[in-house]
Image (cartoon, rainbow over all chains, first blue to last red; front, side, top):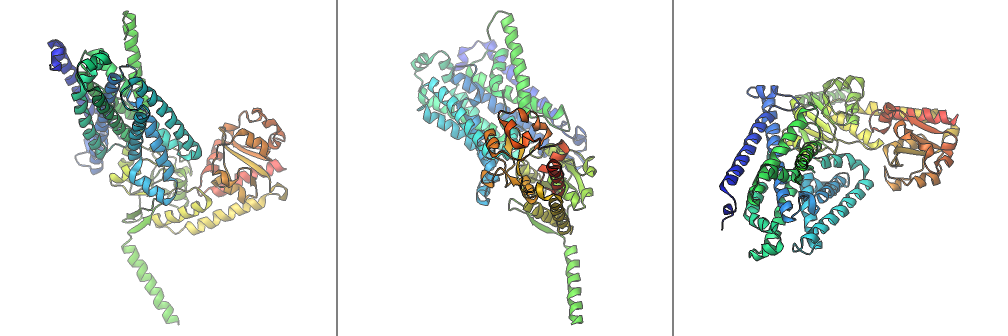
Length: 342
Length: 289
């Protein structure tokens, strides 16, 4: 049975159309993004004969724009996986404690920067990015240990919430002990795409491609789970192993995005909902489209973040919450007005 | 003897000319990284107010091309482009200024990114009186100026002068310096605490608690300071805090309230630390009289 058989042809065509539309819109916005920044369009015009303008366009704006798309795509993908895995429309990528794990990692690294020379050497080598990634992945592993594996969804969810709260408190303790890291930590928590370079893009693209393939291959499990665990088991799927693999996708995708751009709010939660509001799809389609939607959302927010108060910048996480949140609210309002429930 | 002297003198001049010809200099910054500058930088970006003030104190204000949002002194820098907060400034705006050196603090997140884009980054972060002197020396080295020793002598002498200006009766008072109303305090080991110590004050927060500990308000009540120093912003309602009306400083109205501009001077470990000492001394004398 191929999963395409589950859907009528016109739905499948619609999935393709929406996917292409999202990518096309993303491409157009990316081109636009080359012209937006502290120096505006003139850098783009001057890039042909001016080395610094070229550097700004090629080494700052382009990787940053692409990086925003990639980070958003990772979060959108993780969000779709999380919502399918937990069968809960409120699930988001940070559910298994990765957000607090990442901020704890960053807090520890920042504290070590101010510490002895030896600890600073160590912290420098790992860098804030590495610390955030290690923190995020360790938090998810801790959640898995506490939940004794992935067998029980509810236990996993609960363990994730607890790990999130405890690690968050540990981070707060560190900030109280060394208050001077507060501002730097705040920057990380609000999220920013301003520091993304080509190497960060390469990392995110590699992780993103791997996660997308894996999630796409495992999507039938999510389709099965949507019908209830008993049904999924009766389909003969090796649920345990596939769930573990999906949790790994969730942890890696979230960790990679968070490490490069900080805690960007709401993209992971909103992207799958936005996709569902446009098109009906199986999880395979939903995952791919959510990635494209997340990328578009974060890239658009990033463009606005550098454009609205140029030459200064807004923290991009604030904008994603405002944009995604208000659209989602409007969507819910429209549906309930028509008598349905979102 | 004279001839020998002349010979070594001309040798010194010869070496000097040689040094000028190959002015490349290697500076070891606070990360322990050696930054090699082909020549003393002429287009400088500073991303920390105390570094901005340091560069200007050494007479190189004219070489600054951009500063962070919080740098606001001296007046000569006010017209310069602002590049965002020191911790996460706008990378693109910095690159667009084509600086040949960027001076910033350890906590800045852009260090690696700027280096990856080919800029020279020097990390310097003064946190104590000794640091102010060390950073001035480093800046001297980076800028190729020879002013640091003189400037430090002047600063140090004016701090001592501020201390001596205090009436004998004002010394030895027990002081509580509140950084914000959480309340975080400035302890003995902080930069502010060092200035207070130079003025002969006794800090109620010992060095063992760290530079900026978060206190239990009860601790302040029990320590019963003679004098409280606080910025206007966090001073509001201090008298109404539970139990605080019994504190000697509150009862006798000995609270120094510093406005925003004064608070900037007080908290920055930079070349205006003598001004900070004078601001504190003025209030101490006022409240003692």
